[in-house]
Image (cartoon, rainbow, N blue to C red):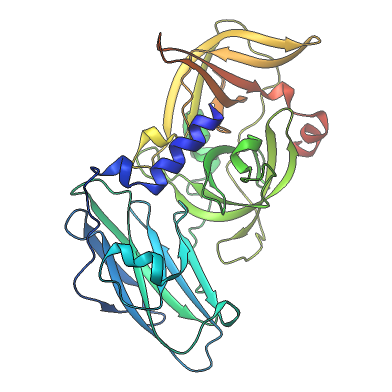
Amino acid sequence: MRVLAACLLLSLLLGVVVAQDDDYEIQIAAKLIELKADERLHVELLSGTTDLQGFKITVPDGTSAVYLNVLDATADIDLALCDDKLETVDDLDEHSICESMTARINETLAFTKKDGLRPGAWYVYAGSFAAYDEEEVSFDILLSFNTKPKLDTPTLPFAPMATLTPLQRAVAACVMLYTEEGAGGSGTVISASGLILTNRHVIEGEDGKALKRVWVSFTRSARETPVQTHIAEVFKEDAGLDLALLQLKTDLDGNPIEKPDFVWLPLATGEGELGDELRSLGYPAIGGARSLTSITLTRGVISGFESTKGELQWYKSDCLVSAGNSGGTTINAKGELCGIPTETLHDPETMEFLSYIRPVQAVPKEWRELIK
C-alpha cells in the first residue's frame, strides 16, 4: 500500500493526467499583474479558462533574496519564478529558474543572490496544474525582499480541551503532515507539549531516510479543511515498527513555541479485544480535492491480531485505511488512541481489503516513558 499511496499522491500532485483530458492545454492569463513587495494579493482562477496567472516583479538594486508565499489556497498550487515572460506553458522548461510544487498549503519559494538573483524584471507564475476542468481556484500571493514575511499563525488550541466531546478531542488532535518533498500523511498529538505519533513512512524521503522537518496542520472542525500552523522536527524513529515521534518546535515564522498547550489524546492502557469497535481519523487523498482535504472518519472492528513472540504487533480490521490515512488516529470506545493506521492489503480481483493498525502497545517503552 505504501508504494501505491506514494504513486497515487505523486500522480495527484503532478496532476494533468489525473485532472484533465489528454488533449487539455494549460491556459495562461493574457495579462500580467504587477506584484509589489509586502502587498498580499488575492487571486481567483477558473480552470480551463485561466489555469496560471502571471505576475511581473521588479527586484531593486541591493536585494539579497526574494521570497514568495502562496497562502490560503483552495487547491494545490504550482509556483514558478521565471527569467522571462511565458507565451505558453511549454516555455516553463526554458525560463523557469526556481519552482515550488509541493503540496504544502502555505508554500514558500526562496531565491537568493547565491542562486543567481539579479536586479531587474522577473516573472512569477502561479496556478494549479492539478485542478479539474472548470474548478474555481483561489489563493493569496505575497512577495517580500530580503526577509521572509511574517505569516499569520492561528492561535491554538482552537477550542479549550475541556469543552470538547471525546470525538471532537480526537478531531482536534489528529493532524495533517507534509514534508519538503510533498508526501503527505496524518498524525496524532499525544501530549500537551506537542509530541506527535505517526508512521515513519509518512516522513520518509526518496532516499529512504527520515526527513528532519514536517509541516503540521490542525483542524478547526470536521467541516473545514485543516489550517497549517506549525513546524515539527523528527524526534525518534523506528524503521522496523514503521513509527516516528515528532516534536512541534516552531510556528511557520520559525518562532519557538513558548507555552505549548495542544489538544492531545491519551494512549490506551490496555489491548483491545476481538470485535471491539474502532474509529479511524485522518486525511486520505481520496477524501477531498487532492492534498487539500477535510478530516475523514471510517469505522470498523478489531477483526484479528498478529503477534510476534507473544507481543502484539498488529490489529487486523475492516476499518478502511486509505492513502493519506497513514500515521493517523485510531480510537477505541473510550476515545483513547489505541492504534496507528498503517497499511491496507487489497485484492483488486475480489475487491477484498484488510487494514493493519499498529497498536500503541507496540510503541517502544522508551518512547512511552517520554510521552508520560
